[in-house]
Image 1 (cartoon, rainbow, N blue to C red):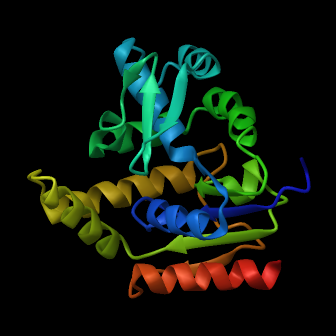
Image 2 (image 1 turned 135 degrees about the vertical axis):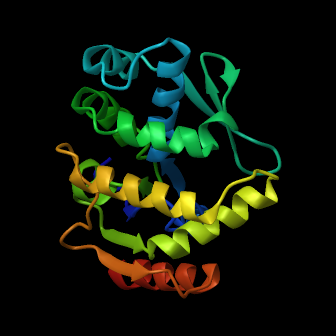
Length: 224
């Protein structure tokens, strides 16, 4: 188990982690852990059961017994099911991202999800995406990346994505939302968002997706 390689990719909301992880994992033939999805699922489950985001005990109990499964789709990608319901779309909304950031500040929730996240470590290897993959969940990972980008650049990317989905949002509101989420993620008491001491930071603000993938794969090859 401990010989299975882990590549951690941490960073703030909108830094491009999900896209990069998908491409890098495909290139390496490794499994993926999207830890943010787990916190988003807890947020959706809490709303379904009318549990307030500051109700620490009930949130932790909910995370402990979370009935969530990830099912691979035929055409690629993953379907997320919560208690049998497909919540793939629900967990990708802006509101859910903000809610997940609040849920993630809960100590009991983080503890409940820690072991579940480590169980994703399967041969031949794992690419783990999140906020504390390199600092808390897989501190012994052989390679650690911290992706970052300016709040403005991250908001522009999100603005483009949401517009393509036909959703009406303003760039100013998205910048504010990202800045608030960054503050919450970086200043929480439990596993705050930060680069691991041995992580390599890549600023993606002025880089294409292909350029970031090339840089990440170069780090993997160098470390291996």
